[in-house]
Length: 298
Image (cartoon, rainbow, N blue to C red):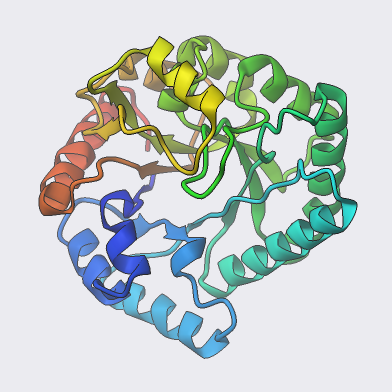
């Protein structure tokens, strides 16, 4: 099973130009991963030659670029805005393919108070179903994540909770070019049981975010109050930690994945502390490699 790393702890540096892509690739090449997951905010999608150069730079370090972390917002009440969001996702799919990737994330959108459950589910499923053939033509699989909240959104994910997430999945016809990107710690933030969610979607999981969470200086109830107030980004009390050192039962996760025959990419998503980024990513990678071996995952 291939293992990737997402530069969560370095994102602000990469986006602000304080860290070059190659420096991030250098870090990843020194830990036990096979690839790096890309983030749309650091993707030069309007420059094909630069995308080719980045693909080669990663390959020179023994790394592939299998996944693209993208955040479409398909729950906007304005149909013209939703149309723009579909077109932007197409650009993300194209950039993913150019980088040599096989998986591009798709989300539902923000949980806007004025959008009803039925409206949101209808709009989102229509957008995703339109995108699947486009992705298939480029040999890219769209992966729907049980997501919490994009760093630049005002509201949490529309399909954050298990009930809405499963309902959305049921509305989208099964396809080899569409699946689930499962993130166990996001289920906890949604007040769902991550193991129950995984059991419900195991046959459709094609990629995973290996993340672990902890709350610092607050409770789940405090988080719910902060979400109700709105505001861009994550609440300060919500932290990513080293994988295997937080709230997730990874033995249960790997047992279910093994039983389902999962053989896709797992991408490490940990930490905000750039000073400890490499150390934490290395600890996460060692933990995950151990679990892969323990549960017989290739």
